[in-house]
Length: 257
Ligand code: ADP
Ligand code: MG
Image 1: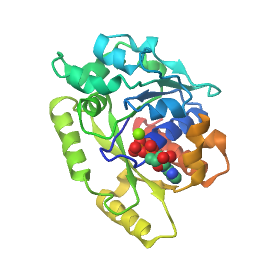
Image 2: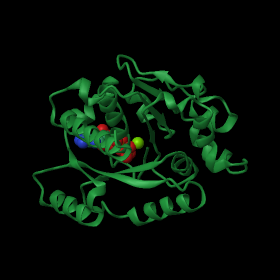
Image 3: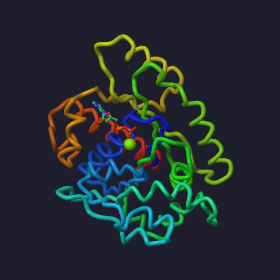
């Protein structure tokens, strides 16, 4: 599942990390692939990502096996991270002349024992460049976090068009399966208006769970923790647990499990 939205600061990384942690706490084996050169997901998952060390960059550009860079997340038994370093910023350009440049990540995942995992969540950078295309080509589902603010829907048409292009040319199985409303401030009318608009547009794709704006959510990464371990009773932790339950429930309904 690819977490994408070319807007920055909408909660992609926060969602990838906390959903992954929540799913792992439901006894699912989960891998987070950090595809953002900023490496924020790696930081939040307490996974080292100094420039120069083996990371997703070597996997995409030098064909390093994914198994060589995947690290267990400290204190989270079912959670793993494939870290990103700043080197990945260069990949966006270095990939251009390469054969199969759009499908490098898919290939890496295919030759890796991906079956070992129940979920693989890919955290995208804030752009629609080759890294995001690689993420979409490798995934079955796209999860779009939408920040409950003015301009929330701006850029969404372009994002959906890109998903269509990837589906048409690279990956027939791709679909936007999930939309998650993030940073919801229940005190503002605007937030509820945006939420309503998104729901009327996208219907059942939108999860019932809504992630509230909460200081605990934004504090957790600086302790290398998910909000569920940082403050299990907080509104943010409960919301991400709820979102994970819905996603797991949908998957089970699809497979008839
Ligand atoms: P993106 O990956 O889309 O750029 P982030 O997940 O990094 O977005 O979130 C952007 C900023 O907003 C970060 O500082 C993060 O801590 C903060 N943030 C994200 N979700 C919440 C939330 N529910 N409540 C409060 N702050 C949040
Ligand atoms: Mg991010």
